[in-house]
Image (cartoon, rainbow, N blue to C red; front, side, top):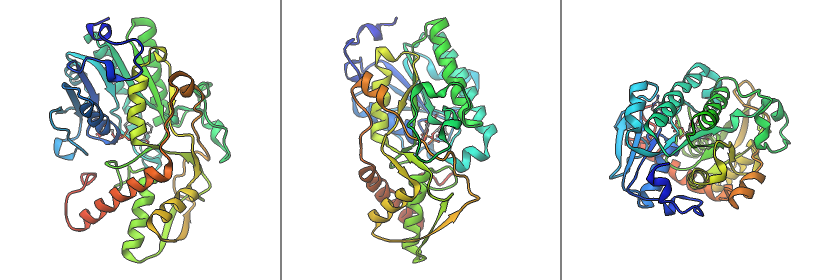
Length: 355
Ligand code: NAD
């Protein structure tokens, strides 16, 4: 395959030995994770990065200097073809997504993201791309295994027999299968990570697509600001999850993409530090230095009862796992959202204003 592969040190388990003048393409780059990934590769010296998102440029969460930034809708075939032109690596993270409130309500939008991967992977194959990354999700796992808050952590084989999260999870599972079959039938090298809840600064924090950590930080900040010392929690707060800090996520993507034993092999990328939503609220309260009265909205979307990442496989192949303590990542996230909140109140533009 391509010169890119030949220049690579086979021992390398991340991008450090790659030729930094080759073009890499990152989709969904106007959003949270792909925005951080663009910044990560830029900071590691990659000189040619093409970042793509369907949002108009002023609405991107971050714009990285020196990066070719293109607003394009990748569910259109001709845009996908244009997107991958000349690329040696493609990181496809574009998807219509959000927290539980969004994915339970907008299943059609979630399912339609299949168009993005379908066009992107075919375009990448035709363009002779060296490696293709797909961001899957823990929502691809069988929901029947997640009906108890004291869950057994999910291991990679638990996706089948399939009973994924309706809409969003099935789209991820189907797109994973595209990645596996493009490798098996056509020889396109694909890498697939199943992300478990990612959180951190420069992500969605209000507007309806935000996830639990950002939403709870915002609610605590709001309660502090208004003096109304109560917090609304979706469900009864007993649901359990693990949360991965953004820095671990981008580092994990790099490692997974450049691991030769992870071709067409879905792998968990998540923290294994399990907490209940009630415990998450307590952590945020501790960071903020307040104690709030809890009101539980039992009719709100709550997702599965429990979900955790079994990291046996990632530790075995990469000798690494996401390891930022939740308390530490949450403190950074809280500080960032507090600033966004203050900026918004002062009439300044904040990252999710367009939503
Ligand atoms: P995000 O919403 O912040 O970013 C996704 C970006 O994709 C958005 O900016 C959106 O505008 C863009 N996009 C949507 N449709 C597009 C299209 N047709 N063409 C071009 N761009 C389009 O979400 P995120 O949290 O950064 O998620 C990135 C990826 O990781 C997604 O594939 C998501 O499903 C996956 N994932 C995220 C989490 C998480 O906890 N955040 C968990 C599991 C999986």
